[in-house]
Structures are given as structure tokens and as C-alpha cells.
Image (cartoon, rainbow, N blue to C red; front, top):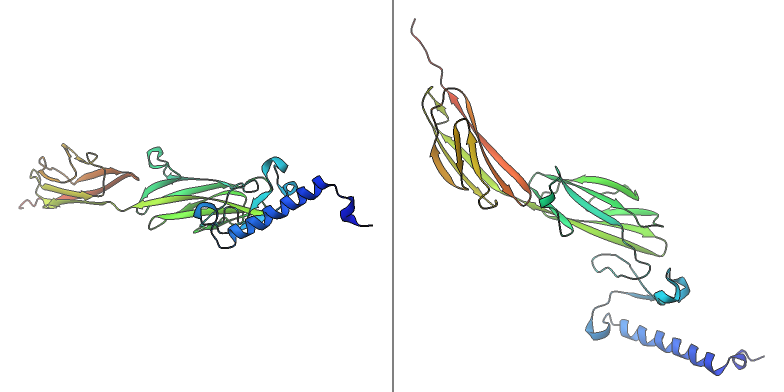
Length: 251
């Protein structure tokens, strides 16, 4: 019996429409350029029954879901949840999908895989294959960290960026050794800090400004002065210590 003879005209038209759509779509994406000249990395077509959202979700399922550098989005692409916090925590240092630390600082990356994931891997750090976990990173320079979780059928990924600042602070006491009751001159300078956030403190001494020089009060014993500033990555500081020369008395 001829199978085609058993199909109604409406069914034949429906099948023809689907075939036409598939052929048209393959032509659109075969050159790597989609509608309106938008670049396309890859496209896979599947039937709606394979989509988690069924027919309501559509029959087109993107390939390489979440695979950097050009992640796709769609019904089957559910990325992991990834967050990052500086150490120690600094609310003003975090936002916009990342955090900021000063050079030598660290941050903690935390991730949670989407439902159904079987493993997670990290770019620029190791997840150990764990679906949920955290890891401390100490980048020397600004670095983007990516977590990619594998789910049967596709991968989903999310990223966070740790921006590393390199502020420079200098505090010099001249002289650095004085006789008891004498003073010293403190000279300080800075670069890459938040304007208006700097101060120098010590016993009987306070001064503000990113760059300046000032004479201290008389010094009677070893004294330490601190030059502190703020940056988008948190507080930074440096110190200078002034020692008192011993006094010799004749026999």
C-alpha cells in the first residue's frame, strides 16, 4: 500500500512546510552569518518534543550552549550560578558581575550547578569537578574566571571577573633616627588611589592628602607612622618607623 496515499492534503502541506523551514534555516546559517548579518557560531535543529519546554518552547535548540567566547541561549541552556567576593569581604568592591582587589589580594569564587548537571569545570581555576563549591584565587592581574557545567545534551556557563589594581604608596621619615625630643619630616606620595581618601597618622600627628610633607611633633621613643588610602579594591597602607638614638652619659 502506498504510504503517501494515506496522508491527507493538510498533513502533506504540514510536512512540506517543516522541510522548507529546515532547508531555509540551514542556508541561513551555513555561511556563519544569520539574519540581518548577525554572526552565528553553530545551530542545531531538533523536534519540539526534545525541548524541556515542549512545543511552547520551540523546536530550535541552540548548539554549544554557554560555550565561550560566544555562548548561545535557549530552552536547554541553563547556566550555573557563579559569584565572587573579595577577601576580606568588601561590599563596595563588588558589582557588575565581578569584584575588585588590590595587588596581592584574593577573592573567593562560589558556584552552584543547574539541575541535572553531571560535572563542572573551571577556566583559569579548578573546580575539582564539583557541582557546588568555592575556591580562593589570587590573580596577579585582572582575570576572568568561567564555570562550565555539563548537562546531558548541552553545557551552560557563567563567568566573573576579578579586577586587580596596583596602587602605589610611599611614606618616608627623614631622618629615620632622631635624638629624644627632636622631630622628623614625613613625606608621602601615592598613585592609583581614591582622591580625598588618604591620611597619615601617628602619636600626636595627623595629616591628610595624597601627596604632602610635614614635620612631626617631638619624638621621645620609637614611633611608627601610617599612611593609609582607599581604592576601589579596598584599603591600602604603608608605614614608616622613627627610632630614637640612645643617650650616653659619662661615668
